[in-house]
Image (tube, rainbow, N blue to C red; front, side):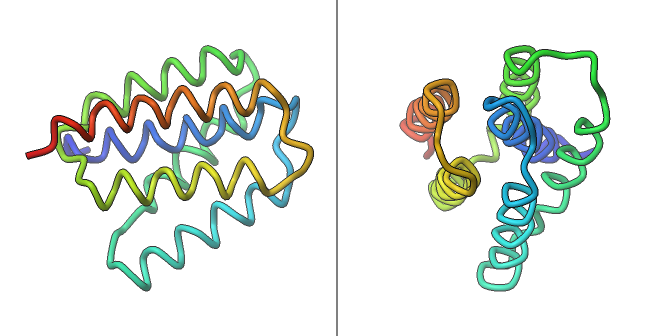
Length: 129
């Protein structure tokens, strides 16, 4: 795995944590993630397949909490975030909002976790050259 892949892999785990924040992963959240990734690949030329791979891989594991998944995802993301660009930060924010909004109602925990990641992105974006 390349260093940049850690960022994508971590983002997949973060999206899974957000999807699980309301207690279960809904089909609409999975479909929204897949649609967003397909559109980004087609429109912007980014290969985000590692995001889906991580999401699907970790979805089958049952021995973690939502908080542990989020922490692990942020850790993995951070390992590759030197490759974060303003455009990628915007893409990640958009996917977070789309996935969290895919299955109403949006719980307080989903909102809090989404805000945490978006704040992290905003902070990291300030260091982009």
